[in-house]
Length: 163
Image (cartoon, rainbow, N blue to C red; front, side):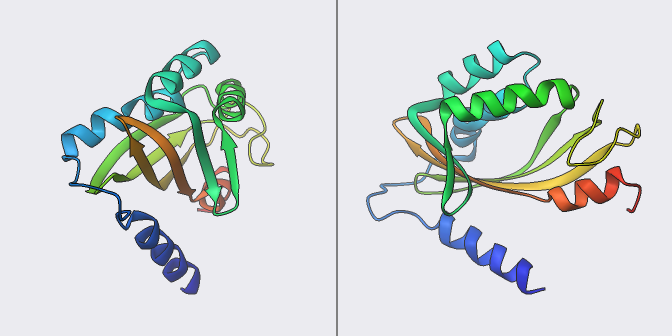
């Protein structure tokens, strides 16, 4: 339970509007701004990953899986492009969007069926479906930093048939 509380606290802290923020984005504006990131996540080719990320993020965009571990845009393009071969049907469904100042919090569901080993689990034909939470910071109409949390341990259990 403490992990859930810590994660909730992190999301609340990350979502707090920065002092320099003036006004909030509407949900519609927020979805339009962050949509290219999700299009990149579900792209069918490495070229499409690049096109979507370059259209929706700043050149110095940081993609952070933890407070101290962020990838730049090029590293993210390489990682997401490599995943296409492993989970070609990877999809995201945005379930909820909250805006606070220049921050956009997205709760979504990711799913896919690996076609080979994934997360250390041999291919079994099983799919995974997990919740994700992303906090995007927006500057000049583009995402300049993203913090994300995914339940990959649940995905691993699902792929092993343990859930």
